[in-house]
View (cartoon, rainbow, N blue to C red):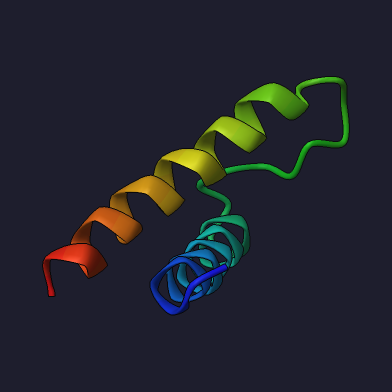
Length: 54
């Protein structure tokens, strides 16, 4: 990963952890891994796009 990709990953993980902590999203304890992964990918893509503009 390049620096911006790594930063985007770290920030997406942090964002997901905060969402879980505040019960905005629920960790995938069932077979619904797809929506959990989609949420991460969405966060990652949005953050990466923002960082690329900097």
